[in-house]
Length: 105
Image 1 (spheres, rainbow, N blue to C red):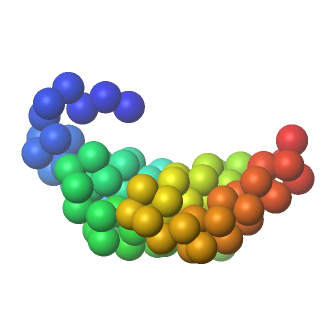
Image 2 (cartoon, rainbow, N blue to C red):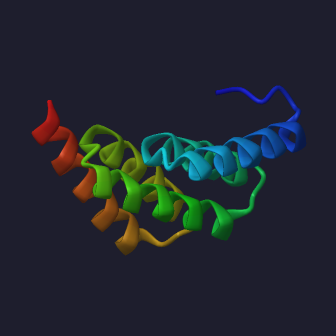
């Protein structure tokens, strides 16, 4: 997803949509929005916020049994750990994501 240099606008829209999803109790939509927020924070260099949102999205994907997106989030989180030099964490998370993606396919 491209934010075309309008990251502040995108952040506001995603946060508003997240509140709506939570208000409706739509956990799948909530988890997808958390993933988008994670990507946006990652691109802004807000690494800890990105990690937090990825972890929240991962918990929801697990809760609702959304295995394909669980694997996707693990892959994104693993790449983020790798970029931050947290190589052991990256290996563990990426291996878990690959196992899920292999089982889903």
